[in-house]
Image (cartoon, rainbow, N blue to C red; front, side):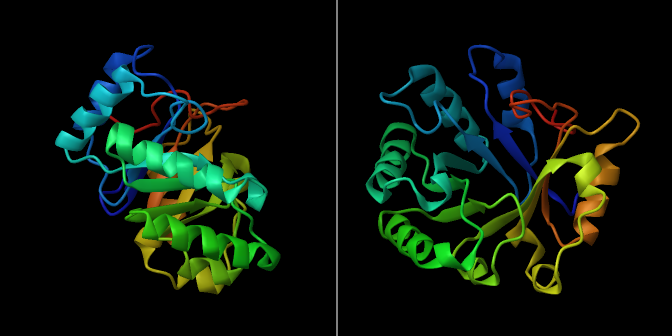
Length: 220
């Protein structure tokens, strides 16, 4: 993968199930990217000591970590999202957030603006918003990173972002690309994403309901 492209790693698998993968992740150079910590669709209901030790090792290695918080396309109660952010910070020392299932239409802007403001007031120092598609341009001012594509390679090949996305700083745009067939290299996918304005990319051959249950290509 090009050194100019950061790596996003949605690590949706427990360290106890694959400790070697997490060891490789701690040694990986992610550049402007990040690791998404997802204990149990968020921080879980109580601290997990295995995750705590693993995250501490990642942080010592300098790996940027953000905590997974589902916003339910704006339908999840704001208090629940804020509680999740507090738990990530208190239990794991993680101050960045990865907001999943963020609304993309203009009708969700006001609610999302309020949520992000409250998260930042609570100490969130990096906000990643996963829309999974190109959102209304108003969302660009609310997050540090916008995920403007999440989907299979066959769709990524046809992805044509609007000019306003291309005009953003490249570390502010992320693509998550799964179901990449074996003949296609991670460098090829990353190069295409970079030409589409994305400076952070995740590339995996996995597919199905959870393509993020293993390390992506190019790690370790």
